[in-house]
Length: 341
Image (tube, helix red, strand yellow):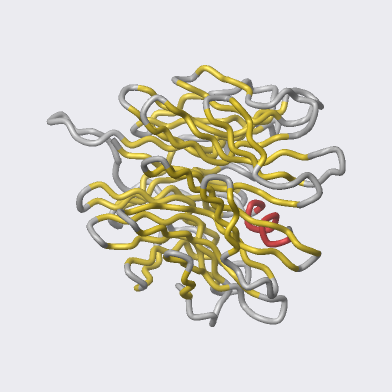
């Protein structure tokens, strides 16, 4: 889909102002997953722990860490790894060790990981023989297709609440037409109205309420950042500029959404909406995207991508302070996901 490809092509963020890490008295540990670039242009799946980088994949391959989740002492990162010229493998790294969720016969990508008890859930998608994308859910490595073979779908986020498994994603109808979709225990519910394009990027459950963040628009209008609460749609941005939402988190009744809004030509501002009120997350770059949000107590953490000059960067924003994450420099570098424990 054109919008998704365009947004993923925009590069990463970062301005070093102050560290986000544990102090000597103890404190939260901040994990981020994303991509570093080598001088040769290869992408390395990367996990940052309190700003210290751990490379998860080899420097000669192309890989990406797209989601991080911490359960007890175990750190999980979902993403993909392409070895040589072979199809991409959906990958799950547990404490730095890779497990491939697909067999390599067709391209597959893991986009989100969630751990509930002893069960590990990974959302993503794969290509079938007709080159359609098929939304996927892996539970403890066992694959489940969320869509029929002749459809074109992607799963972007997974959240488990009790016995219910929620997966947010998108169903492509025709060229220029897509529908934000939420699967609950494998059954799809279409959130978009089918007019133009809509997508669901993130799902979060708080009590009995299910929140989904994404975007919607038509070729004739600006794209609008969206929130669906229990299936009811509400616009997060006002439509005056191009905008999109990538992640939602609910804490103490407050709803946090991050994404981007367009500004001057070739300028994108990372944006945080708290209960509908927007705040630009200034990181000193002309192009910045907020990819993931996590709230712990009074602290709000955001994983960011941005671009300054010819260099792409990754960073973590916390309560107005930005920490650059050590990473390579090149198109694609960025932080995709943040988890705080």
